[in-house]
Image 1 (cartoon, rainbow, N blue to C red):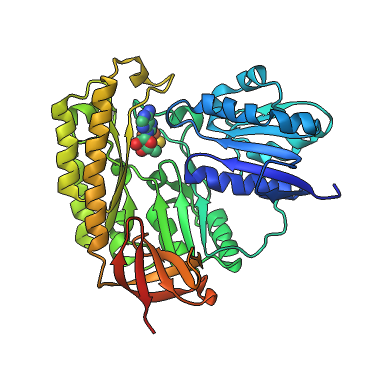
Image 2 (image 1 turned 90 degrees about the vertical axis):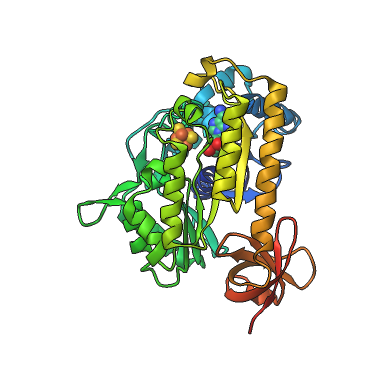
Length: 441
Ligand code: 5AD
Ligand code: SF4
């Protein structure tokens, strides 16, 4: 194919979608598409959608509606919908919004090139299957440019846990782990392109059990330890984990693998055992707390993050108090909290909802507690020395911004040449969503 065409990709939802969007843009890059920052003037628009919470499909339809004038101005404009809403809605998308030319589920991105050929012939293309093969291994790559110092790498997809509120097992399918040698190769390629920090991604990443090059099966800890051998790769993170898959060697890695950063996102969702059971989490609050104690025993400075759902069907004020108690006991560096929303097709969607005003009130109270903890953890950093991987200039002239090992955004006054460097920084001030510091020589 000749000539450059313009591709606009809009990504919703989790980091796995960010990774998927990058891979799709690379695949379309091999077909002559260059990514642009705005939909105006684009030859192809691709929405990579998320279905995890409220009104996801409706938001996609209204977003699509906004592209109508663009399509009228340019009848050759191609519009595609990818991701979990594409998976959940399938053909319905093309029925409701005939402008859409392509619908591709999260497991079939490697078929994009042939789908694009169909579009070239003026046909529509739809694929929401769950094939066996590794979709990333079959994606063509454009020549890969230099890139920023941090990257995502999807190592595992799908989930077999079936929490009763969650659509992921339906939209992303069963757990599949990518073979370790391919991941190590991809990690080396990223490092060659300037990456110094890799975040390993998976819907349930610590359930990773990929084929090892030695013929055995590797868990996440083994993968991390091997990846840590790569020269030039300085930091490894992973997200998101389930407490029941936190195996002994992964806990140990937090203590003895220097490149594994002291930050862990380990959602518990609720603090009441009754609610945890109704959520099908298969662990109690006490088990979660003991687990955190074991990880902190090997890595005392660990910053912990989590996810919470309030107003789950059947949650009483007493149950909610148990969530507040758990947050008090654990102490989070940061945490995300959501009001329960019924996802069609999940078991919990059949159950009676908590009063909406009550759920809103609980969400506010939980968020106030989390914010208080977040502030306290951040304020406690003042006076401490951290190591910062600098990414880019800050908003103020002469300012550079990067991330500490604990994933705090840190600003310093420093030269642009700092981008891609790791430097020691003394924290001097705690601001609402970031820290500022002083470069140490
Ligand atoms: N309602 C509210 N929050 C949800 N999450 C997942 N499904 C739902 C739902 N139906 C939250 C969980 C999960 C995070 C990614 O989104 O807390 O960990
Ligand atoms: Fe959804 Fe996470 Fe539960 Fe899997 S473990 S069902 S992705 S909330």
